[in-house]
Amino acid sequence: MQKIGIYGGTFNPVHLGHVSLAKRFLKALELDTVFLVPTATPPHKVRSDLAGGDERYEMCKLAVKGEKGLDVSDVELIRGGKSYTVDTLLEFHRRYPDSALYLITGADMFLTLEQWYRFGDITHLAVLCAAPRDEDSAEDLYRYADRLRAVYGARTAVVNFPLLPISSTLVRDRLRAGEPVDGLVPQAVKQYVYERGLYQ
Ligand code: ATP
Ligand code: MG
Image (cartoon, rainbow, N blue to C red; front, side, top):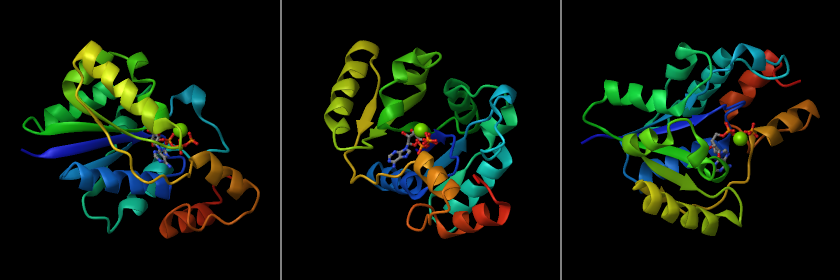
């Protein structure tokens, strides 16, 4: 059976923390493919100082280029409107009916899962995967995963990978301040950001 990782985010921009997390889960859970899935931007949330959907998609493409097992999906961008993870999982389930789906999240997202639209359905569609983003969160993640298993019968996979303390917010702040972002984003993404004058 194929095992597919689904890793959603705004990826504004995609950074090495994202790429590293995707690769770690690919290996640790022996997934066949991990898809980065950039969320759509609802019209009322479009901001001129942030990159648009097409640009975020392009940057994700550049970030996974040459990374075996990593790919990008435009399902949410094509669907438009507010992106609901349950719809994305249903779409992947339709496309890959015989595959097991793994929903990949960082700590901040994982700890909010119960509030997600149709969370009950999400638990049936995918294994809920999480990794810490800072020193404190590993214990919280294990505890929360226990709860999701006990209360909802969810399937979970919490893995305590080495931290890569990078965020898109940090990258955008540095770009706006004219500071270098080497070591924070893939080289090709840096190039793209400069060429387009993004996040200035
Ligand atoms: P922003 O600062 O704009 O919120 P971000 O770095 O948090 O950006 P998102 O696109 O919001 O990136 O996150 C997508 C997913 O990746 C989320 O599940 C988030 O928890 C996870 N994530 C982001 N950065 C890291 C990191 N350095 N380590 C582990 N998980 C991460
Ligand atoms: Mg975030």
